[in-house]
Amino acid sequence: MRISIVTISYNQRQFLAQAIDSVLAQQGVELEYVIVDPGSTDGSRELITSYGARIHHHVFEPDRGAADGLNKGFALATGEILGFLNSDDEFLPGALAAAGRELLRRPDVDFVSGCGYFIDAAGSRTQRIVPTELTINDYVHGSATLFQQGTFFRRKCLERSGGFNPTNRTSWDGELFLDFLRHGARHAVIYEDLALFRLHAESISGSGRGFDQYLRDTDRLFEKAKGRPRTTADRWLGKAYRATKLLRHPRYTLERLAGRA
Image (cartoon, rainbow, N blue to C red; front, top):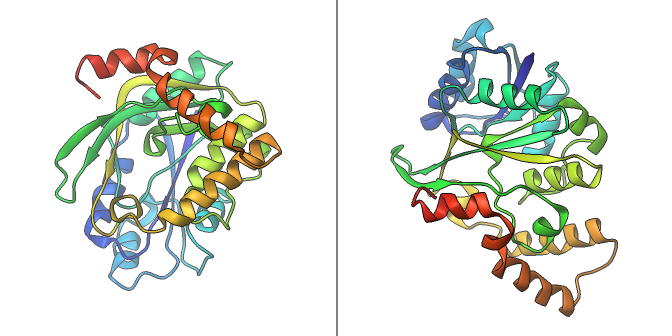
């Protein structure tokens, strides 16, 4: 089964080769790789083209942000299983094969997330990441643990959802996964380490940029999922969801108690 991966890149040449190499090193799958760069000026484009035909498609044109760039990249993808990796993150060996096996083994599951690690700018692992099985309520009440770098999905999920929301500048991945759920997709977790999530001073997650907008987006996504604005009662319910997270996700809890999360 062909797996298509899209990487969005903008002026992160210092990490880009590690990201690309981690994709191209994947074995046991038919890989299609797409890289989108809207206008880097740090040598990233020259690095991308140096890989020649090993990168099957590249998009070198302006876009309206990360979500728009991902939509452009996936418009070229032909795989039945899809995933996306930022230019400062990495896949671990065997990640794509593990995701493909799980989706082949479980036809009732539409998208899967594996585990992984946070890493720093130098590539040192700092903390293990264990995602939870996603539900609409867990997501909108803030009790879901997502791991985009380790998430892979069937093509039909993207087609049914309509792709990424290009106006979302803070949580375009989370909104996409929420849209999967809204259209009836089922999520599962693979308890294997599949990817590395780099936090550094220039990354959105590491810098804390846009946090106020992120909070506004979470309220917008609640209304999108529930069909009404969030109320005070909903905020209390959200506290209850977060307080009972360990009870409702026993495998997640076992991983944490084992000291691996």
